[in-house]
Amino acid sequence: MGRILILIFALGASPFVVAAFYEWRRDQGGWRRRGLWARERLLKLALWGLLLAATGSLAMALVMDPGGQTGRYEPARFENGQVTPGRIVPEEPQPRSR
Image (cartoon, rainbow, N blue to C red):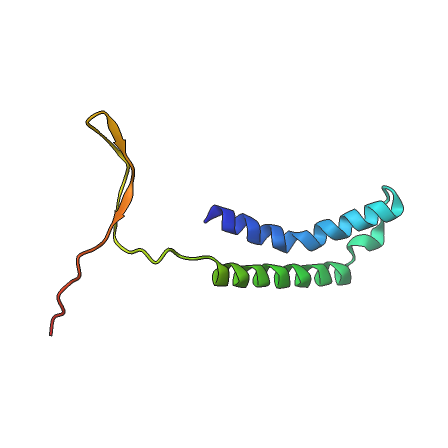
């Protein structure tokens, strides 16, 4: 979950990074000038960041497989001198009540 949040944040921040790098390369270090971070430009960069973050979130939701496994997780354990890996034990189907 943490990796997903970091990726969404990185997508949202990328227009600001690209704009700063572009201005720095264009002016050879003069990226602190007054017009670079004007309100209108910041608004455009923020909207682009929101669009990128939303698109990335949607793409991850469509591409990532949630696993489809349901059940109870048994953690890895040490038995008889060997490590038994963790696994998901499927749940027993519950009888339907009327």
